[in-house]
Image (cartoon, rainbow, N blue to C red; front, side, top):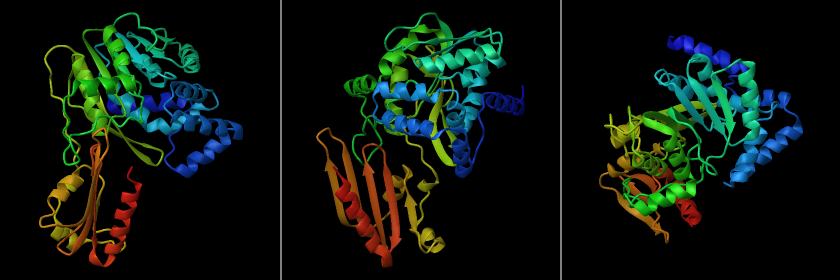
Length: 394
């Protein structure tokens, strides 16, 4: 089947589930108000706020509420492009499999799509939300899918049964979104020590260890695992990748960053990993930050070509800001502060001048970088920004 026909099949499938592709916030929220009662919106907002606490009970309560028949088509339409990005990438790797486990399947929106495209493959969807699984079972029955079954189970409480030659897990292994990960050696570098105690602590406090161990136990020798988690930040990506590698999982192909839009908001997830259990690695793990065009920094050209008189001459909030900062030859530091917490975490803030241009640079050991340059006439703005940052430091 061609890519275009697969895309059309997925669009039809999402429409069958009641999902809409909305690209403007005003259109989406107008539709949301028409579809949901005020008390439903209030309950959903409150549940989303509680979910941020990180308490597993609040997490479960949110997904149970989100699975209600009147709510899920509206709520999960925000993830329409996510389903497109993940679904089309995943389905390209399912052909050789005979038994597939979809861990953290939720309502089974993509699981049912895979089952429809591969009627000769046996699929099992598993999720700890009983409400989600009830919806998934009903939808699978409506579609007449005899090659798919759903199970409600919390694998942190009990091990899985059976064996699979492919395991899929998306946004389910590492749900501790508030956990910053493991810090680098210092604010000057993106490198991290290979410290077993730090790695173990990360895996235990995020729940990654038990989930990943349970999935590896049911993955057949030479089986494959397809994984995508919210690990775009290097501080989370590195220990997550080390957890995968530490269990004998090897990359089949280079990891691929995932980008899509949630209505108008640009989202960067990933990477998207295709892994195999055991054997020789096809490609190596990458522990470097993603650098963009900001790494190509030319101060003279920037000053000549600056177009916006109200904006900064240069602004970079990505990892490449460090490269640009390092290329500020002959800079004079006027103010700087480096603060270190008891656990070794560091943050550095620096204000200075280079070629009569004023700059502010921020860096910390969780890979956040920021560089802003502004002309001398507006230097007071950077001074005020510097003081604001300093006051906000713990």
